[in-house]
Image (cartoon, rainbow, N blue to C red; front, side, top):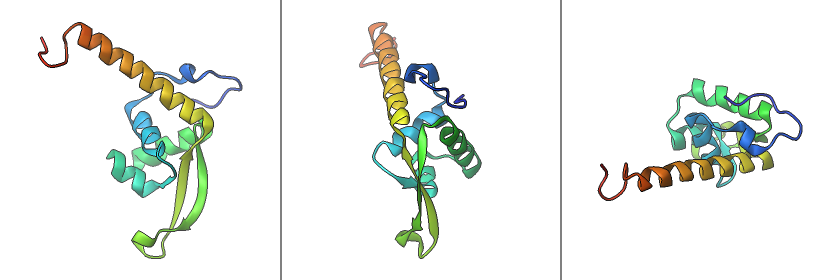
Length: 116
């Protein structure tokens, strides 16, 4: 679970990330998104998404990008979120960790062209 930010904490100290957290950070890697767009991209319900975003904001992994109207949904105001520099470092570290796990599974022929 992501906890409150501690000064000087290395990105690897946040690992492993819960799957929902990883998916949210990956969704934000392309740029700012509002909550509903994140929810659609990662397939989370509003309770899980907004609870996770609150923790990510507190941990300093995500920043609010402000509110603006959403042309796709009329004149409705939406709050936007973006990766903080620490969040980008953390999601990159988690992607490397997962990649190493997948490579280890392939070496053991657990996955790949002809899994065991």
